[in-house]
Amino acid sequence: MILAVMDDLIFGVKLREAARRAGQMIDFAARPEAVLAKAAMAGTRVILDLNLRQVDTVDLVRRLKAAGVPVIAYVAHVQVDLRRAAEEAGADQVLARSSFVTKIDQLVQPN
Image (cartoon, rainbow, N blue to C red):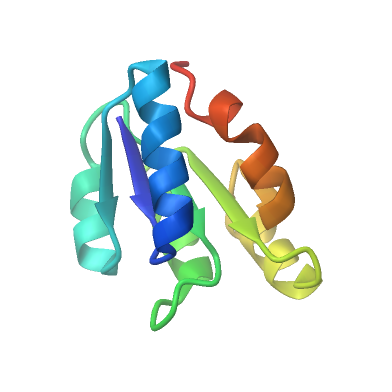
């Protein structure tokens, strides 16, 4: 299952459609407690918008990785410090938003 952690409606629609094409289940969450609870399900991968408002996304990456959850994150290409912080927190991949959009179909493929 893919757990999308974002508040961007356009990206959410694109991700939902890509998951549907790949035959993947997808769920959405934004509050850290809900993300951690849903991510605990076996086989869950998290796709995280590092620019999510009102959430310490780097801490969320750290907590998800401590639980053994794969994390793919994306961020504006100019936010080098945030990208680096997410990588240091353990994110499996950190993509620029533009790259995320072009690779969305690959990212939702079953492992």
